[in-house]
Amino acid sequence: MNESTAQLPGVDEKIIGKKDIVLYSVSAILLLDTLTASASLGPSSIFWWLCLGVLFYLPMAMICAEMGCAYPEHGGIYAWVRNAFGGRWGSRISWSYWVNVAIWMPAIYIMFAGVFKQLFFPSMDATDQIIMGILLAWISVGVNVMALDIGKWVPNIGAIFKMVVFITISYGAYDYVSEHGMANPINLDSMAPDWVGSLQFIPAIIYGMLGFELVSASANNMKNPGRDIPSSILLSGIIIFVLYVLGTVSILAALPAGDIDLLEGLIDTLMLFFGGSTLGNTFVIALGVMALYTFFSNGVTWAMGGNRAAAEAAIEGELPRVFGVESKKQTPVGASIIMGVSSTVILILYGFLVDSNEDLFWSLFAFSGVIFLLPYVGMLLAFIKLRLRDGEHYRPYKIPGNNTFASLLAVVCIAILILSITLFIYVPGEGVQWPVLIGTLFALLIGELAIRYAETQKNETQLNC
Picture 1 (tube, rainbow, N blue to C red):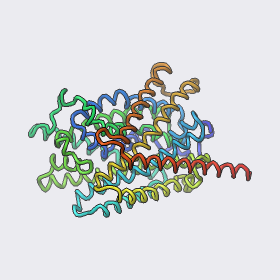
Picture 2 (cartoon, one colour):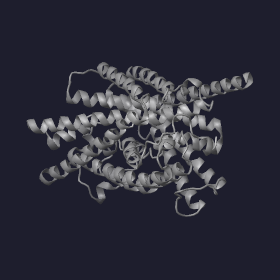
Picture 3 (cartoon, one colour):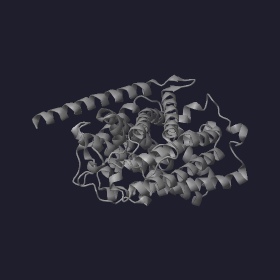
Picture 4 (cartoon, helix red, strand yellow):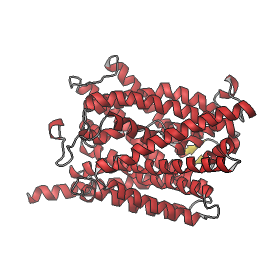
């Protein structure tokens, strides 16, 4: 399918403008749920944010900007890999992209339940929190099958709330430090990387730097993708990076690195900055409610991109047809419902395998992280191939320099992704994380079976015709 045939019937309404792209990107990439994980590194996390910002974040943003406006096709990352390597590899990318969201969504909703418990119902047990996660997963399914002009407001509002929480926590840190000093002194010595102890959470930083390609899955609904995608990625990229660094420093200002809880660290920090009085506690609850909404909008935002990519693959006959079932307004009903079922099963199964909700969150996060990072390796390889094979293709935005320089940027990003995947599976000092490894292999095997089944369906249809 080339650009002239990429448009799908019923989805050509140009309703997404530059403001929507910026807010959507901020909602997708700026994740409160990874903030405590990165802060757990201690002051060395500042070094890793700055280092990986130069080596990975900036190159990935530029690559996504070039690909998004050069190939503004429905399906985004799936379409790019398919164009470079063929349908089967595109299908594998779509499956990994989709199943990652189905695994990650339970993780983010477990964090939602943990914060909800901390704010409102301290007596909630693990079973209640898992039930809450299941309910949220199905609410996300409902939002995904709404018309895009309605559903887009979920991530837009989430982006605004995230910026409010990040800016507020940064102000609170400034005020707190002026009176109490830093819980973790930040200087050149303390920011020096711990090459063993800090490695476990480096993938969480990389995780928080990905997602610029997500909005390209709806490029055909944009008013002017060639103009808006590059400038929107630049603006959202600056906002995201600055707020991530300020948020990490803010948590380090409040809590000793060794005491940061992955689920409760955010509210602990807010209570330390603003709590202690009736008005202050009410303010913390208001910020906590905003944080809860951002967790929900994260799940919805990623589900929109993952389900749209899976539906496109199914329409092309490269995933089972059920993934391609759509509503009258062309929203991905089939992929959304299957995601809801998968998230429910994963929450129930993993609930029996771990000892605490913090362990449940990290196990699901690491499991989804491995599968989440794999498609980006394929995307970067597709970028290199399309740059070399399709060099004459019009690119409204192009990375400065020649093909060798652009390819080198992509290779560095690939190396960092492979390192991050390895660190999700093998943690120095702890060994192989077997639930993560086994879960990843099982998910990829199911994907291969689904792809082969889709190919059988496609062949049968061609024979019948």
